Amino acid sequence: MKLINIHCENTGETRAYKPGTTLLQVALDMQVQLASPILAAHANHFLKELMYEVYAPQTVKFIDISHPDGMRTYQRSLSFLLQRAVKETFPALELSIEHSVSNGFYCELVGSTEHNPAMVGEIAARMRLLVQENIPFTKTKIPSNEAISIFVNQGYVEKARLIHTRGRLYTSVYYLGSHADHFYGPLVPNTSYLLNFGLTPYYNGMLLMFPKASKPEELNSIVVQKKMFDIFQEHKNWTGILQAGTVGQINELIQRGDAGELIKISEALHEKKYAQIADMISSRGSDTKLVLIAGPSSSGKTTTSKRLAIQLKVAGFTPKVLEMDNYFVNRDDTPLDENGERDFESINALDLPLFNAHLCDLLQGKTVSLPKFNFDEGKRINSGVEMALSENDILIVEGIHALNPKLTETVELSNKFRIYASALTSINLDLNNRISTTDNRLIRRMVRDSFFRGNDPRTTLRSWPSVRRGENKNIFPFQENADVMFNSSLLYELNMLRHYAEPLLRNVAPNEPYHAEACRLLKFISYFEFISPAEMRKIPPTSVMREFIGGSSFLY
Image 1: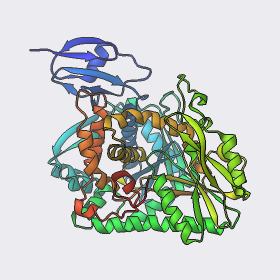
Image 2: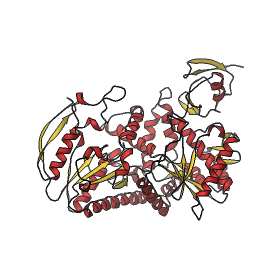
Image 3: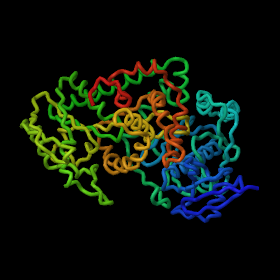
Image 4: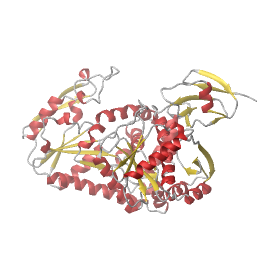
């Protein structure tokens, strides 16, 4: 028998193995030791489960929960465990994993007529028993019509709908005992890997808690996010009324020719929300003269500020924009991060005393001379432009630090109206496969970077971890400070973005380090039915989508 060579990046060792050897056997044989248990592997830059059998030469890198793919593997597996525990504990109910909030996944029990916290304890106890039983997760690939029958028989209508509308001949089905499910990524080998989790009552459901990526022996702490929770629930109710809460439902709408109607309804909701926010600002009275807009990367902040400005004009205001980037300190004075590099995302990269002084002067009716930051020279200069606010003027400031109290600490709270904008994806693949808002924003950014910044997907994928670290540090801790949250996601957007993102992701070659992430995103967007170019032309020029694909009537 001809042996195959497997090179392990973790140890730097190459060994020969029989064809059909699993990655788990390789990890054990090479005695790979990571900071926490190995959960999955990148094999030739493809993400694979540990039970994957090798039949060709491979370069393998084993990963644990500290890697984003390792964390997702743990979360998927734990979600499957929760689903089985619900079915065994309360057979008449169905698990719905709805969205990420408060450092966990918010879940509800569909079919329950009462909110009983004791039920959560029973489910958690069943999960822990299943963990002790070391039950294997297994995977098989079968004809899609067979997979649809399996899920229909289990009562998983949305899972069956998703597979049907995807239109593939074969579908991967995972099993935990006799219980079947479908995922677009690997699972851990067996339930014994899932020792650390939490399940606690939360609102009318429960919160599934995961280990910390940096300290897997500890669970993430619950962070109260009432406003975030409320905005998710509002959109859940709205998508339920439209019967467009899952990808399968949206795919069906598009396949029967209703994409144009879906676009019109989604855009109309946005317009209604912009008008409502403008009315909220107007109702505050004449004291409110400063509107602050914050949000993470690719959340549509710029379009939000421009469309809100239009609605503020309708309400009788004259909006003026104060560019926060012009208040950067000189580049040589920029604070350093933990690696000794200039941290341009730090709030202290801004001249806070000058910014606050100008805000106070403007709000008091004084005239200020605006600065201008010369990015070529890395220095702030005088722009020669002056600004003053008249009676009906209102100032708009947009940026990552807009909700940080330190940015406007000298301005009275009554003078400020704070907005948090983000693509808070309100649809799911099916009832227990959520869509990450982070993935939604990453795909937006990739398309925008290609259109307007000349960046290929490798550049976007390489910079994304740094972007996420900056968001976790500078944006997310302050989101609950907002007076209102605006959900910039649109029901049709991922179906539309697939047209642009797919060729970009296919351009990442297998020998490149970001190939595994490109493949994951390709698999993800493959579930979305294409919207035709003719239908995409119906997207209005003021849509937030135009910020990413072009054709906007706004200047950016």
